Image (tube, rainbow, N blue to C red; front, top):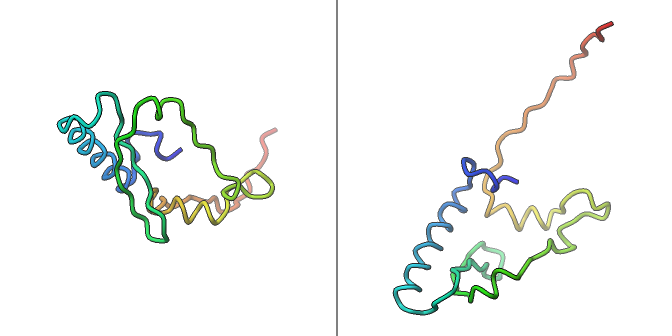
Length: 109
C-alpha cells in the first residue's frame, strides 16, 4: 500500500524508478527493442541488489506475479518474517505508529 501513494515513496523506489527510466532511454537509443520495457530484476543473495533488463512488452503486460506462499502466515491473515526480510530493503524505514494510551471514555447516554 505504501507505494500506491505518489507522495509517499521510499528512497530505494525513487532511485530505482529513475534508473529504470535512464535504462529505457539507453535501450531506445541503442535500438535494442522497438517495443519493450525496462525491468528491474533482483539479484539472488542476501544483500539487496538489482539489475535492469530490457523485456519485450508482450512478456510484461500479460504477466502477474503472485505472493509466494512462504510470505503468507499459516492463518492467511499476515505476512511472515521472510516477507519482512524481502521487502525491508525496498520499503526502507517505516514511519512510527501511533498508539492510544487506553484512556476510557464515558459512554454518552
